[in-house]
Image 1: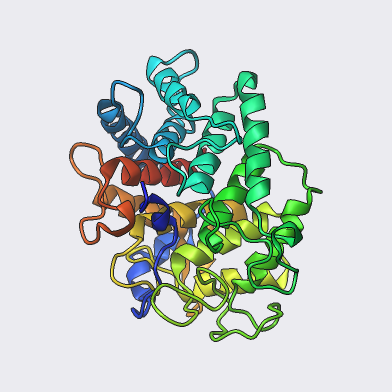
Image 2: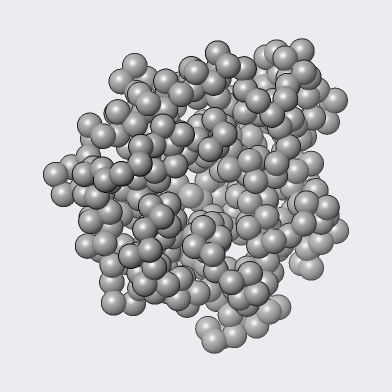
Length: 368
């Protein structure tokens, strides 16, 4: 599980984005509406069913997937949020939730390991909220307090002028990063943390400093293209390179924190996505590393942004739901799973994790 959260810390890359690859059918994209083509919608529904069937066959006797709270929570969320989700008791869901609850700790964290406590706790909170069960409210409230305690601020010796201020890391004493913070903010949004809670404003300090945008960033940036890096002026592959996974995570973080779509930070992030639009790769990342993390974050970010079409900087309109849906259909294996065949780095060689991410993306595409 040590490397699981590193999945969330997607690497940057030297590979240039390919806009033309995303426009496989410009005419269809130009005429797209908020509704998917019925034939494609049916295909996506079948793919979701097949993926869920795969996951159900991979659950261990103790209720876990990949012996991990994080992967288990994602697998459960993928099924709970599915448009094909059935009401009523489901023994498989109950077993998975029981595994999660077995790893609730006295400090409020939900994790089987100390290293990834933020990630595990965050995705477990989101999944417990997705059950709609009031009986988990106390566990969720304790988990919220745990994540609030992880945020670096004055109590930890960090003044607002410090680049780490407002960030959250893996869950120990290590440095913060945007990926960890985004997952925590998603959990707080899903569990209805008070929008006036100080956590949001503190988080925006770190998020804004992780954006390569000299117009809004109060620190000097090494790159100035509006996208997001892993942390202020740092990307895993050198300098402060912006890349697709983190830019989607950054855009989501801004929206989770209540920043308006007209805000220059949101517009700069969206313009980066427009300039680097593709579903063939994780744009501006090395090869296919972090590809499915990107698909998951991109689908959530586009759904939250609320526009069915993305018009790239060449003036070509793209129906992102159609494009990503067709891409995920093409990448699904016959057994219903997804896995990154080109790069197993950051746990993308684990089909339980990658299938869960792909299903969550498809749930957003399908209109959940």
